[in-house]
Image 1 (cartoon, rainbow, N blue to C red):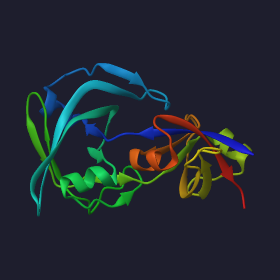
Image 2: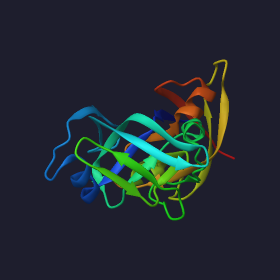
Image 3: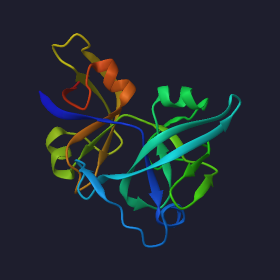
Image 4: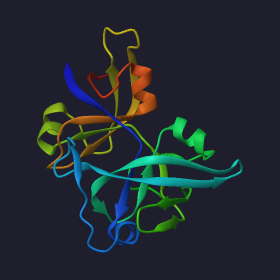
Length: 196
């Protein structure tokens, strides 16, 4: 039985260095709010407003938290519920795969910036180190099944959980708030990999 931690990842924004400078000012240093499970990552005290112009007119999400370190490309990760509120229809994608995704506007304290792409619903995935992946018999890109909320009223099985392997990854499965609610997990829980 392979037990794994499950973390609920609320809506958040990753910024590129160029976009961060435009929105917060050149040389701005972000203030950590909370350390995250993956080494070097933290959520910031700073938030931004996200604006989307769709068929239902202009809709927005306030107080969207940032995750750093900065990335090559800016990317907004939201839930299906968030998408409905915005009137948007972003695809379910692995982080970093933003081609052909909806654009949005970022409103920050210093500037506003319109992005042509970058809005996704993050595909559920498992971060795992190379050593642990070998121990579990998993490879990068595998799709696995994970039982979540065992023994609870909302116990369920997540299918198509993508395995992401890197030497420095800490073991953690990431799901969004909709998936967390479905499994009765608010912030953190435990899952069990189901081996066929």
